[in-house]
Length: 107
Image (cartoon, rainbow, N blue to C red; front, side):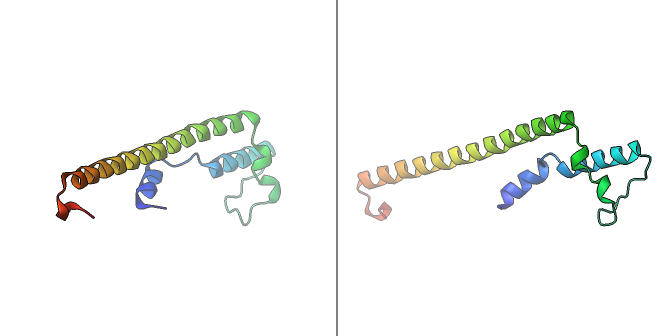
């Protein structure tokens, strides 16, 4: 992971799946009258959250993930286009130097 992407990721984190799972587990514990165990290593398996995530919650999570993925892809596309534009300018400049006949500019 490049430093640039790490910085972007820190500023644009993906939707937090763990928060969704924890919220569903807390809700289930409340529905059954239990106290939710915060420590995942001590938490009873029936308080696990995945099976208690509702369809609406999954829909919202999926929507947020799609938006985040679109931003990530757009960022990548912009980087590729910028790299191609730099390469095109470099090749054009090198071609001009070569055509000018200036030997010290030739590679």
